[in-house]
Length: 156
Ligand code: FES
Image (cartoon, rainbow, N blue to C red; front, top):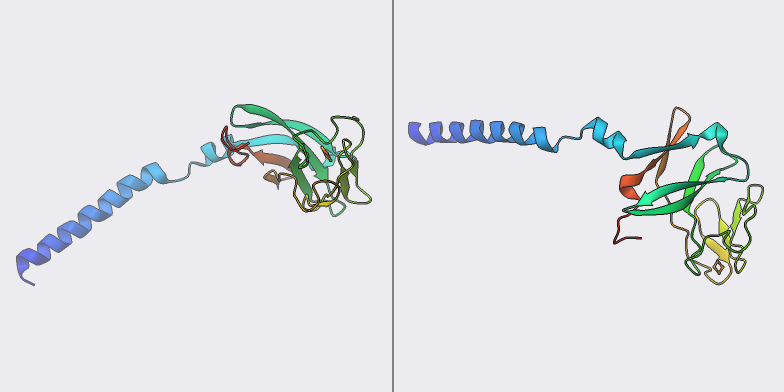
């Protein structure tokens, strides 16, 4: 390698490094924008034993979610939509649909049972399917939903 080739290689390396640093300014994750997609739902302490419902967006569509506090204190959230037909679990008979003692959700239309731990339908016409899981996290006792991961207009 002669002197010219060496300088060319060094110049290229310096240029590539500067370009990389410049581009990283645009691809780095801005903590502010990350938290902008995190919707506060409630606190863990405020979740009633029978669970609670909340509104959220899937793209432009407003949907309803179910927030549950499990016996070990963890939380789960599912879209309030049965897997048998596109109906809310409590469409036909609005009532308590979460039995915390059994860890079970019930669809009041045709009696499907769903395991609260993972949304699996254990009995009923949609046996074997799962409720749509919603991405919730708990930070300092506050429950957040990541609306950037709840779907879009084409994924509802
Ligand atoms: S709509 Fe839920 S079991 Fe039929």
